[in-house]
Length: 202
Image (tube, rainbow, N blue to C red; front, side, top):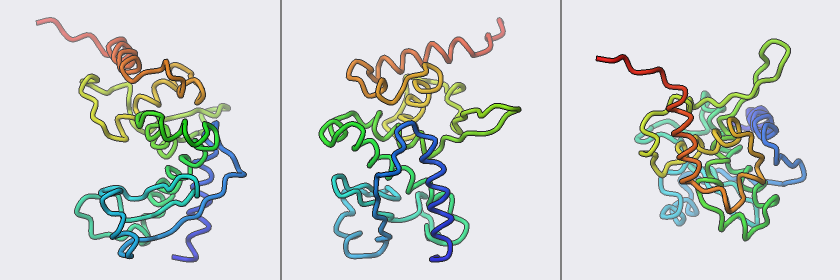
């Protein structure tokens, strides 16, 4: 896959530049560890993750495709965009660490740290008319049963995307201690109810 790596990295950089905390001085080492001894040794840590981040030394470990029961190899042709998103997610953790400081980053709740990284890996900016419009590929504004959010990265990203795009928070505001998950869920629930069509009366 050597000849595809530059294009994959370029795609990841484009995605990273969407983030307000993008920092070109942050360096990242990327390792493909699938089926290696290190992969076996660290399995209890990453389990079903397709990649994981090592803080302080800014290593990104690419493990396997993010699909359950998949026979496909993450580094095979056709998965370049998925690989770019995985790299984007892990590099964002390095940028979060630099922005917040190590201890703040590791002590911050997962719904913020992981949610922001997941949000950025799926966030796009598209040209609409003469304007650059931000979009989020997960349709959070149509999400039902808000109170049943799971502890998944996708659910975390829905909350983060709502706060950044609808409430116009900055990253620094998002990371403030007084911004809680319960508060964000309540605000999202109110927004969903506000934009839902009225149920027909029977």
